[in-house]
Image (cartoon, rainbow, N blue to C red; front, side, top):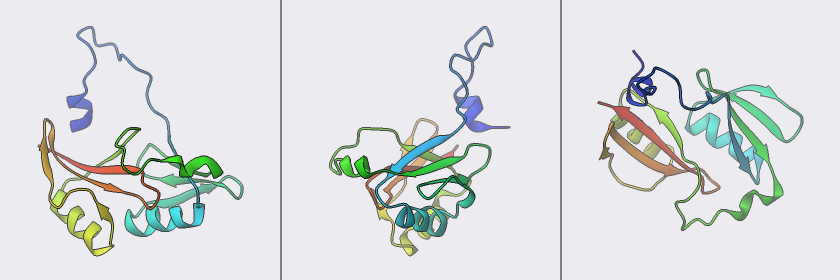
Length: 136
């Protein structure tokens, strides 16, 4: 059973409304610093290097692509607009404790309730917002 699939079900005719995601791209100003965060804090694994400025990270079936870009430092750190990378977890308390122990920039002290369960928001070193989500 996939809680995300159950929560975001197809329409009543059983037809998927949108095309399936095949990758998530994140632009970063410093690939080395990004790799440290995503591999050491979030435990992603490097899957493939596409030249000196692009790396694919393994994370289930959906790869995360980190791409170094000079324009990636445009993010307004006071703004919450833009995509949010949401990672599913079975135990959000363990993730919160692990994030705190690694010095992650948490946007909230404790997990908050949301319609499908509870979540915690945090930022990567460049201001991109990520969340862990535990389905009820």
